[in-house]
Length: 552
Image (tube, rainbow, N blue to C red):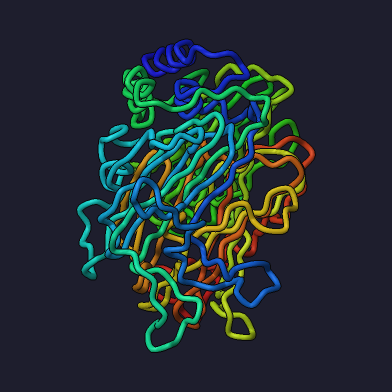
């Protein structure tokens, strides 16, 4: 009840009309799981400014898979005698909604945010103060998710993650002043005629752009001060373990191979507010992959994902907790994504494996107001099994999370991989094409950057929107699980979305990588990823690949 009361209070205190965007309203949206199930109003586009390599011009160009995604900027300016590198420059109205950075020997500098064409920044500060310290907001709005882990090579820095929204009415420009940055023309003995800036600045800045008719109240430090209580209350929600509660349905069953446990409800409109499951087996790793969660809402196939992957722990027993899913030390797995239905829902746990498993499932069904912006929740999974990490020409290549044709909102993804070498697997950039655009509106700088950490570190972490339950496979043989949930940085699409991530491994090997995507959608929608029963029956890799790879 306390959680519900805080959410209602924040919604009331946001104090704006429906078509006005303010810091308070964005905070309310961030912590409302239900808001994600409605197509955004006012509508927006989600874009990203990043330090990706500018040689990546088009999928058919030679530079499409160029690495070295650092210290690339829009331009260099002189402002009041300062040399400033421009990272973002866009007309409004809009809002910065998620920001990640890290550095190699370039962390001694000042970030400045200029709004509405002002010559003076509304925000200025060192990266560790502004993005992961308490200059703007406390944890979890600003965080270094692996703070305290060994830094490794001298000059490497921690990750910096800022989730505090920064709305702007007319214009936004973000710069970085760093005296260490200088232009070089030689890279490890190779001449670079055009030159490049060193040392290294990596950045990904997600921002919304609204229609010109939308009224946005620009961020000010005074407004930030007025929102301090809202920020504290929102932080309590983000770190809370108490889900929305409602009418409970549950089931418990011993599943022989081929058996299913099914929960159903026919009293819609309603929604699943939380879903919990515990799976007990003599082969727990395998069962977390071979027991599949399958959901149909109003007769529509909406979810088909192995249980372990859906709840975020892959086929491991590692604990983690985000705002939307978790696994605790008792083996209880939880999901807090709102799953609406107009008439009925069927939730099945299907045992496609060869082992007998005991499954216990509990769901909270909550009231839900269905309107013309309501969407169904969807999740899809597939595995690239024994995938060679180079194509026939020896080049990296794109992997697909999912391609959806229709209308909806992309709200997150997760990968579970087994790396069979001591080399780094994650140089690959995320690329998200929205509504058939020729160049992705989101082009990243590396897999770990996308998932909120830096320099391929192995230490486990959990954050409301980010998680690495296990990172053994980062530059070692073993499993790695990375997860990212989207709230204010969710990606609306009106015609289609094509979510990809590069396979860019330092070694030419075979590896397993399973990709899970989470989204909301209007019916009908066409998915390019279909249920794949043979894949969930394959033997999972725990220590290294074995000749006998089947679990049938």
